[in-house]
Image 1 (cartoon, one colour):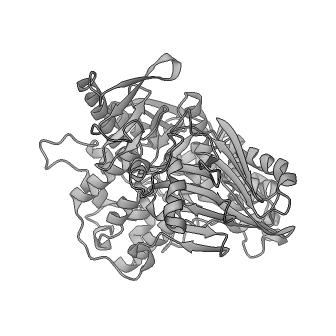
Image 2 (cartoon, rainbow, N blue to C red):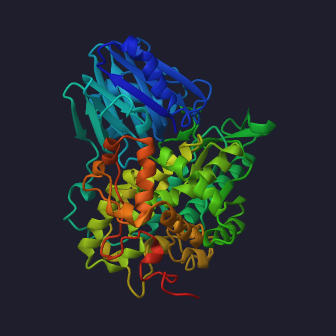
Image 3 (cartoon, rainbow, N blue to C red):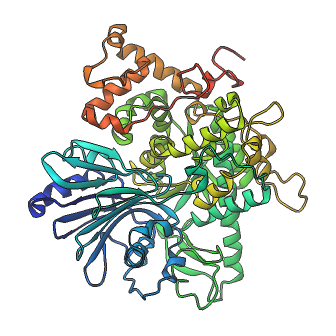
Length: 597
């Protein structure tokens, strides 16, 4: 992840520059490797870089040869090698950065440029000749992105990766909508991501599940996200989603290692590059000779991956309170897969001490997000200390497949399907926000294979009857079944059966049940009954419904002005009387609150 800040149409951009640089500095945690800025006309772009691809040459903002088009990007473009070969007018690429393709893409397609991108991204592009700004966010909102305006500079528009570098200069801020593009020519946001499943929620799919297609599409999704030139790993909670990601990433790692051994003397083989701590970095290149992009990392037209593997084996990471459900399962999965696993623990005190920092970095007061973000925030710090800069993570699966335990209560398939769409559509305010900001707080990038465009196209067009939870079918049955090789004697198992068919834990539950209980207990200390009866007037109708929620909101208010609250969404279960979002609050959970074992 990188950090960006931009302002278009400022009345005095040179005078504003020191402020713009200060706003950029507010997100330097996202991009600690280098800082850059570019001014053209009355527009300034500021970029804080986390270098993962094009290490030596990818500093931003990126600028076209003639100096006309400038670009600041946060994210990764997985199909950049394919795009580089697609342009009708040859373009002189100055870097190995995956993001540079956005400039010729804009020159050829204008405002339609984002439609052609396969990746996670938020970017601001300035065309000097037209004095035009184009800004876009990826289809699901994996990367965080905000847009603001100020009554002090009414003609200006501002963009940033995080709220914290907008609220000092803006008094009107929105979360930039995913799948949209902004054009200063019209001063309008337009949706460019228009799949049928999203645009027609009442059109209920009827296609039966194709297990092989589901599996192969997801494998491709994981493969393309291994594009890197730095040490990377996988977050492994021991639940189904992260375990599947880890399993496929490990298979790909082993396959690439095998390919490297076979081709040690060939052109398509191994190029030694300096890695970290004196280790050799291995450039795996499975592409055909004559490919003009074969020196670049990423996937080619045939979905073959070229990447630089700095670490000789795949590293996996988990965190929890001592003896937590997820930690035990994660170690079991890691042992089965053969990853180099790191089990970290945190104390309840560690978590409580981090809460204010978590709320500052996450920019939310949503109970679910804060509960789950705190362990992820602590884990990311440990990961960065090991020198790892990118991790794969399992977000998105529960939204796509109806994996949350409350989906048991869906009244019919239409309601089930529409709820999955609603959940996917709100990911940018929930789990994507958590994954992005928890990791980027420490300069680590999280990639989420379940939210791949192609995979979504397959998974969201399956008849929802196939996804529904019954006595015979556990949640996410079809995903589990797609990777169940028990009737394929020649296929090595992806996961142990007991993991493949393990019941869902909310991440905040899985790190140890004591964590949520401690949060509730501490909220009782910090928030009185009297406080609950007297919410702050600036909260309007957004009144916290528990002492825990009240406590988080007061901490949020210490960091951000009240008008920032409109960018926050509360996560609550549907079809449930429970307002507590924990999985254990749902009656179907085998360890539900009112039972002891």
